[in-house]
Length: 397
Length: 159
Image (cartoon, rainbow over all chains, first blue to last red; front, top):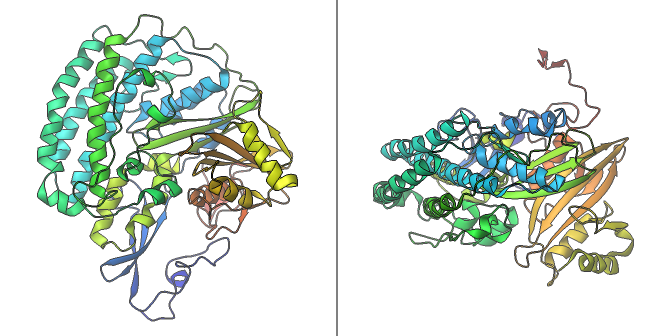
């Protein structure tokens, strides 16, 4: 590749804004090459395109390109006739953890409306959110193994996820996009055998985590591929605004369920797992992966406590018949499996949001990808990307 | 630190750059900042020993209609545990605001998204390109008066 050839000639068609960014808008060096990874690539977990600038096998820089799954969620929300109608769209953001997306929107709107929901609703919400956290982490762990080349753990993870989806299906009729958590309540009460099914899941699943650890977490090949790869130091993670397992993997003990609590989380005993650098440096891919494994154990602890305490009551008694919040705006954030999901809702006193902005955890975590990838090998990019656990439905919205 | 104290600190330091604040009777207490001072204010909020706003939770641009735009910054201090909201008022004719990308890297993509969707131009942003829409898209989709174009590069835009 000749020195005069620039990135703008080779890759960029047109761009807006100032072309003065140091690094990327410079001409390529003779030894550098641009590789496009995605948007159709098995390990990008959706339609994501990464532009890799490589020097041989070493990655000099990464430029993520997103927007392939953009479907105007925020514009749609403004055009709804009712606040409740936005919830099915929230499902479709983080579609592997839809309960958590719904919960975030519901608590944001409840804060705007200044309504409190019945205790029974809060407990069922917590159980559902934690079950969904396990379901989401199982996908993250299973597909991460798949990315690295371990096929079998994927099947084990999906076997366990199936039990959770069956519980959801029995409760609200849907296995993926639930529309279950409504503003002020729930769409259905749980079935009479719900508590037994949840207890039985906890009993089945706890030993399976040990099995997963033996199969994948401490597997020598897996550790070699992930330890000391894609290290994200704690201060960089905070400055990028990373959250969830990406932030905790860097050793920062930060979980909104404890640090900025919502719902009934303060009533439960659980730990915040953080990356400790057991296999390599603190904040490497293995730490981020292991935080998810430990979080599943902690979610089980929460579920086991909550399921014993569900009070009686009506789950729809607090659902407002007509939702017209006062003029004002509110920002509310919740801890989803991917990290801090925030909703900024602006109301102008009408029946639909004037503006709804979503702060997506995957969006912010992905923006820190270049900081993790510089200096890594090309094959490590797959390992690093998988360890962030992105869902493009939430990034592009 | 409570919002009143944060507001006092900012007014004593920046004076006219802090035109207004609403600290009571609203869900999230907010302080209004002049668009030309937001970077200095942000830097001060991040680095002052008793403020230490190390995290930008969210950056949103809003089209308030009637030619008014706004940018809303939700800040949080992970070290000290307090929160504050900053608001910057802009107009459609002069949608220029200072970038805080150099203060919090979180702002990099959020500002690109705000530019892409609402058309706020962040001066000093190192790489202000469209993020979600194609780079040759025209118009700002989240503006309230936005009209969906009939054709894009000769293709009919279905609705």
